[in-house]
Length: 289
Image (cartoon, rainbow, N blue to C red; front, side):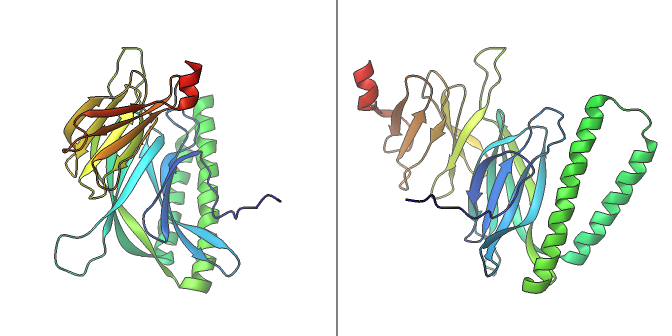
């Protein structure tokens, strides 16, 4: 059979490592260049999906810089308003940044193309003034600046394309999000002084009350939301935990480690995640051993 060609929904100017769906029309993509000063930002983008009459298109409605560390894993969920008012739900993201996990709240807002254009012009003028004050720069600084310039040009192209599309299809206004950082918690510990700890996976329970994280120290930690209070710390593996998931009933948590000696494990009890229930090794690996 001929290979099916997939549609290109959107283009990114950075390596992407994580993606989550927020609504039926919005997805979040995260990644970046890491701590190295390469000029590639560490960020997440929110894309709104729609059909332009020919194919599915992803319009970037938000781009947010998360700082020095690259996003390697994410989980997302909707948070309904507690008041009785008719309000739109906000969205929560748990973002893995090396050994830490940031909780980020996204609140819907309406932006206009005119406001965005004005802010872009102000930013360009400020950057132009800064360049005049620079006389001599190191090579790394020049490379970082060149990378930032490329990213800025890509953003400008995206803005112009979005303006033309919004004007013809959806008008001058569009939905975006206000970003609020709620907390930052260290979820992975060092086993040795020279080690670099990383959170490698995170999942949220179906009722959005628990967040489960796993990483390079082999521990699975359960956190109460929204305060990120530690509920349980389980030594799951000798090496890293690469992936995990939670059953919809919240009473069993499959773990997976893809390092040598790969096996799956379930943590379960009447109270979620409190004791080790079973160890399952794939039959193919059993025969090799």
